[in-house]
Image 1 (cartoon, rainbow, N blue to C red):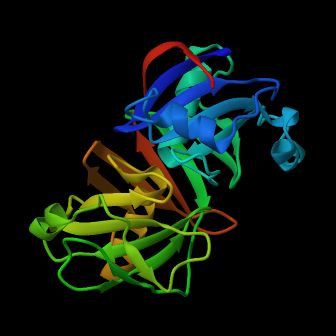
Image 2 (cartoon, one colour; image 1 turned 30 degrees about the vertical axis):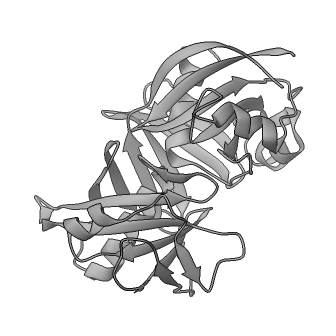
Length: 292
């Protein structure tokens, strides 16, 4: 069996297998990705990041046409092998890998554009590690009813699109949040055609301190299960709570997840409001593994 090199990394506990394939020569099947991400028989991760040049794969053609500086494409796969549009924590880990490997640089005051299936995402350095501009977002009209084990009654969810789909559910207390059993897939009615990540949120008390909003969150990621953190889910949760809180709610948030704390910032642009995510990224170890 062939050997492939890998690096293991994480952003607030949301962990990834990183494989460098600059020229797009490696075609990983869903089963191979799932085997690599398996926590008992593989390396173990919430997903896989393939580091490939945008120009080397068909999915990167639109990226190169939009911005030739977006040399690298983040081919993100869920732990079950399925392809996903985006991963907020993954972009930071991806950038950390590019910089530490000498494949890219971020000069002071500049950005690093990265191609994804949800378009180009621009990263900068931040006090926490990296900030990624997740781009425009939108509320969807669907408000599915969400049921999950440990939640006494079904709750309506707010659908938020960040290039990938999210459904955010408000809970009444920290105790209710802690009692959820997310080992079981939450049931959404009606179910989104492409599935969705489901975030369960509780605002802190007080919710706003020195102009910054604070909340806690747990998440079930489609194709993965419960994770310690989900970058786009964190942004969706902050956007949902701001929406519920009304026009006087802040545009800066600190979101506590089981894996740590991540900052969210909403800001205006010429094309509409964007949302940015700031947090750490770490590379843990590297090695080789047999690819069945």
